[in-house]
Length: 212
Ligand code: TMP
Image 1 (cartoon, rainbow, N blue to C red):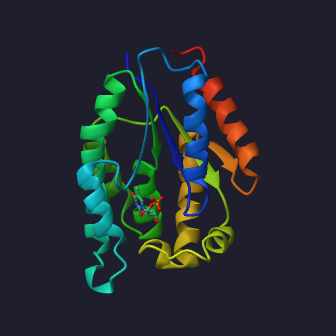
Image 2 (image 1 turned 135 degrees about the horizontal axis):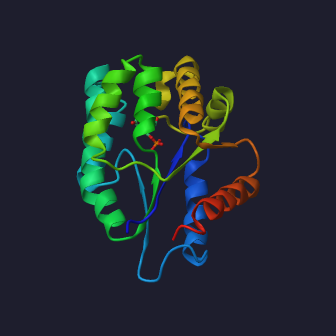
């Protein structure tokens, strides 16, 4: 028996963090997680100790440290390899549940659709990096690129967030395409926090209540 793996995806500012907080407060009391199992919340990039260092490297705003597109892809992939090996697989094998703020489809959306790196190359790398792990359920919190920019107008952007609206449009289109192909649960993230949270919880119950 393995635990369940839930991923939340979406462009910057879509409210993933808030929704993961809501879900992780509710899930332990939902009756879905067996006694003796835990819930782990994690994120990419930066879910492991080494990953936190990689996160600092990838999101560094200093122009001198800007990686090439290929180096960027490989840094996200290195972060994921470590995250899977050290955090995700051990937790799932221990029958624990894992909620991750982003996983491999962020690479497909940002580096593939956003940076135009060949999707087949990315999928090949991912097939090595993910080591057989894939989400049991993925949510796509959908907002427009305009809304994304508006919501973050008072924040200092990281390097990827500084890419501008055209880049975000391509990433968002990528997410929409992947969501269709992989049958994700798509939720309009322009609704209020409680409505989104209720929809997420109902979907989790529907997917997992008979499959403990
Ligand atoms: P976060 O702000 O959601 O923590 O993610 C940091 C940034 O990294 C965000 O702009 C999306 C980007 N990103 C990629 O470009 N590729 C990836 O594979 C991942 C996981 C994140």
